[in-house]
Length: 348
Ligand code: MRU
Image (cartoon, rainbow, N blue to C red):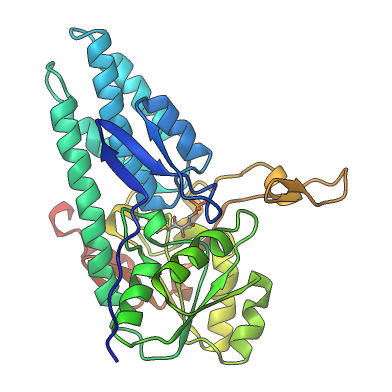
C-alpha cells in the first residue's frame, strides 16, 4: 500500500541575511524560530541544544561561519582572518561528539581563501551543504526503507527532520518506509534525560500522521521479547572507520538487547558523520552534560537532594552489533572497515 511521502519540517533557514533556528527546547509546546547574526551566539545555541542532532549541527555551523566571515571582514577588511579563525575554533568546540560540526567548520575554512570579502563564497558553500544534507536524507530513506519488510520498528532519540536539514536519517527511513507500505507502526523511546523521543520524535510522527507509540527505554527489552519489532533504526553522531557508532546514550543498550532477541539494528548516517580519522569507537569523545539534566525532568528537580548523577550524552555501539549501516552512498551489511573505506574511493 502506497501513502503520501511527507517532508515539510525545516529546523534551519537562512532568511533576511540571518540564520533562523527552530528552538527545539520549546517543542512540542511552542514552534518558535530564533534568529542569529553572530557566530558566538550560534555556538551557544548549539551547546544549549536550541539545535541538536549531528547533521543539523553541521549545517547550522556552516551558516555560523558565514556570520563570522561577515562580521570579521566588516570590522577589519585588511586583517580579518585571525579573528575569523578564532571564531571558527570556538564554534568547533561547541559540542564534542557530533563529527559533523568539525567536518562543517573544516569545509568552510577551505572556502575562505584570499583576502577579499569571504561572505559570498561562504554563503554559497553553506547553502550547498544544506541542500546536500536534504538530498542525502532522501537517498538514505530510499535505501533503508528497501531493507524493511513490514511490521513495526523501534527508534531512539530524535534522528528526524529536526536533527538534519529535513526529512531525517532514521526518521527518513521511517517516513519512506511508511509511504512505501514497508512498515506499519513506530515505537519511540522517550530518551531520558532530554526527552528527544517524547518531545521531538513523537511530534514529528504525529505531524506526519505516522502511527507511533511512546515507551520508556527501560521497556525496550520487554517490547522485543514480545516480538513486537523487527528493526531498531537509529542515527549516529560519529561513525568510526571500523563501523563503531556513537549515538544517543542508550543506543548501545538497545544494540545488545536487539542481538539477544534476534531484532536487527540499522544505523542511518550520511558520510559527513563518518570520521575516518577515528580508527574505532574508543577514540570518539563522549560529551558529558550537566548532572541537573538527570536530577530533574523538564527543568523541575526530581531526585533526592544530595545525590550526584552521571550524564554521558552518548555511547558507542560496536560495529559487530550493527546489522546495516545506511549512508547516502550505499548500504553496508554489516559495517566493516573495507566497506566504509569503499565509500570514499577518491581518498584511498
Ligand atoms: O544530544 P542530541 O540530541 O544532539 O543527540 C542526537 C542524537 O544522538 C542523534 O541520534 C544523532 O545526532 C543523529 S541525528 C540524525
